[in-house]
Amino acid sequence: MCATCGCDDTTHTHEHHKRTISVERDVLHENNLLAERNRGYFEAKNIFALNLVSSPGSGKTSLLERTLRDLKARLDFAVIEGDQQTTRDADRIHATGTKVVQINTGKGCHLDAGMIQNAIKGMKPADNSVLFIENVGNLVCPAMFDLGEQERVVIISVTEGDDKPLKYPDMFLSSTVCVINKIDLLPYVPFNMEQCRANATKVNPNLRFVELSCTSGEGLQDWYTWLQSKLPTPVTA
Ligand code: MG
Ligand code: ZN
Image (cartoon, rainbow, N blue to C red):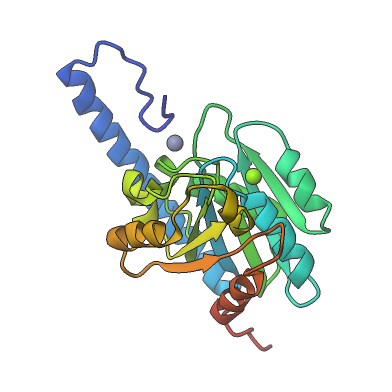
């Protein structure tokens, strides 16, 4: 069940669907207004916000751990972690010495802009910092929820099907970058890299790809180069 729709009506009458659609529209409209406020906050403070989305187990947290450890001497980071339960991911981020807030969504299957607004009020990320938002592992509804981020990074790993971009097109369409993770496992899995990239490009011709492995470190430099190329110029006092 999706908490957005709240749809647990097994009878599924026509009236039920009408109501569901209008509720969903209101929820998304409200979310978009809050997302714009977040965007304004990030712009004013020169914070570069990224929304990391993927199915569970693609390696979002591992990519963050590597990135934070490798770049923390050069950049100021803050992280918002989204999961239904536990602080396990926040604990992993905390261990890297990075400022982190965990959001538990309970039955909810995505983060929304209001949750991000509350989190940034509490954590107060520094001016000129990079804010990573790790969304709940889910390739479906996080696509609909703008959090006010500048970049949306969809992560897929080579242990998944290379047809995922075709099955979950909204997520690949709404993302700006596609990280293909766990490339060290390519010799052992049937994943077809060219096919995956072709499928994703069919959905979103502007999607940019970064192939990497958080385990071997291969390709991480491409990710860091992209990240640093996107950083806004620091505001000078
Ligand atoms: Mg995680
Ligand atoms: Zn959801």
